Length: 304
Length: 180
Image (cartoon, rainbow over all chains, first blue to last red; front, side, top):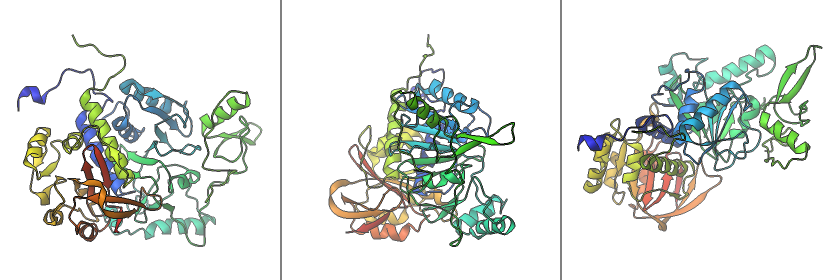
């Protein structure tokens, strides 16, 4: 072994920003995450040019997977054009030469905060979810060593207690986002702050999902065709948000997850949360040749 | 004078290791499917995954020399987080690290040569498989699958990559294997 074999020619920066050793570590952890679905795997979480808590976990997974032929879509609360999404997307393409897209159908790699697209993801697509708090047990057990033991014992009774208390206090389950779900019948995970509407999309899906928390330095995965069962009581079925009958005031579509926009008059109007689906519907109505993919929800209902 | 390219271009090392990882990722995500590695053999997998943070066991001396430059510490099998070995006899398999319920990530990644499409037929079920899938694997010890079932008490266990030339099949610990 010589110095020459241990060094390499000068580069302005590593391809895909992360250096080779960071990528190797992430690869090893991502493989373990796939092997044990829903189980949180620790990783080092390198510095990236973005503050922790703004999607650095998702960013590192995406950077590891990027190659020049990738097509990346980044969404923030369903929108492709928010500052956070636009900045991350332009960073990703700048450091890798990958193509950018807003279209779910065209993307090979989708990094997302708080939503899963309404159009069904295919078997060749990878979804990367940014996770602020990866530990579903944190509300009931702040000590992470104890929480780890509870995961090891599959001791999840206290999560049901939270849901029970919500029913007792409010008459219904109040947990709106990050609804805890049992993955592969063994580990409870938090699906990141996606709405209840999106959680059934992970159950027996075609695509591979990575969930990564950069600040908390943990990642986990939901492989394709994996059971993802929200925690429910046998006599209180899982309910998604009551959006099935709402109509988007811009595109006119009904039956998807909506953003509520309060009006001066005291009422409110609704618009599609998955902004590019709305754009495609509007463009199609104007006569453009736009392909719409099959959606998970049909007429506001998820087929069983 | 080196120049900063307007569009970043990956070098051969990056292209190779990225493609190797993608093959491993899809192999593990869809157990039983055959994925294509960019370079034949086991050394490419070591190149994509191993560095000085790893402890490796390598049965084959020629392969051990090949992967030594990646920097992983050579250790006996019961200490290794990555193991490159032959599964033609079983005495090695009982020594492979399986982690524990408390630390499932300490289960080893095992890479072994095999032959696909002939030999023992297996039915696979579990995450990554919609209903069930059948594969045929040859070149492994006959009692391997019952020993694996005994050792892989989910979520503890080891994850297996079987290699035949440029083809790889992944069998994560979450896969249930029925010997037909």
